[in-house]
Length: 444
Ligand SMILES: [Zn+2]
Ligand SMILES: [Zn+2]
Image: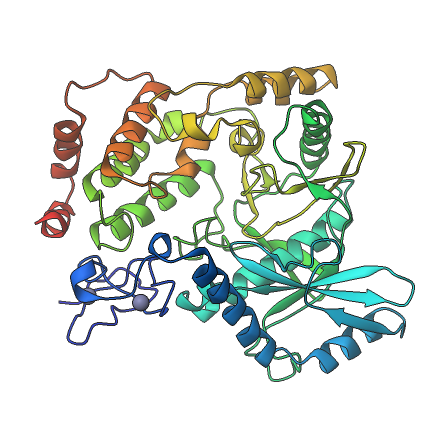
């Protein structure tokens, strides 16, 4: 029987009617597989960890070559020139310093260099996006563009955005999905201590600036005829979620995200290797939503960079922050989350462990916020790390053991007692839900 839960894709094994695992397509052949058929015995491609460095580089090179077969460079240069007062420009696929490609996990960037030496980037989603529904991809692109346009009217140092286009649009002659944006000079922060004070000072300034722009709903930004407004959420940084919302209250927002995750886990689309731990994780959030959404006196929502892991911050040679990049998936979220501890001050290893609690850097950022006269933001920054744990989730792990640590960490942040056996405890939580039969069939 087909389930009612929305699917990104169906399993590519013939006669299999299960949904594909979200974000689980084979990185060699691109085929999507369900939670059963992603095992070795059904599919012979090696995993990325099994191929050599040369083979890995060849894969990336092939992808970028394929992308350039679709990209119409002449049309791109024509468009860029038109948008920049007719100034002539040229295209380079590689960076000038490193001669490597400017490429992240999710996007490739080509350079557009104008005669006056100013530089723009064309940002193009990588092939990993192909497994997502077109409508969702298009919303993510349109929303990132709107976010950058919104930021242009603030003091947040983000790249200026000049244009975006969708491959499905017949008027788009460039041939790919893209955003055209300013290239901000600078090197990504390497998380080093040397520049940390300067980085945290800038992060504090940016949080204070964003706190001046409240929104009435939670969701992601879109722009229509110059008007920027809140629309559905642009998925999340794992691209697990459908575009839902916008939401009028923080409670509504958290509950809907929890229910989406619970449905997806029970359907085998997320966390197929530790479904019960993952299900218990979101069940606990859903049943304790009052603690998750503290009734602060701030009812508004604020823009948040959802992938603020440090390398989104560019610095000049002196360590001064030149810009904040990679605003893909940005959302307007409740104040407690917008100004609470995030990735930039997290200890990544600790975040994946049972060892919950604020870090020294969380505390340091809270103090800087207070020092800059923002006592209320300082207070939110040192409240607890519940929202950071919620958004970090329980999917991006190597083993079931780690999932168990994450669950224990969650209980610790919530101040709940630690069960003797976390596996049995999770099982009991799952059993109380109407989706238990589906969950049981996954682990059976
Ligand atoms: Zn494959
Ligand atoms: Zn299958």
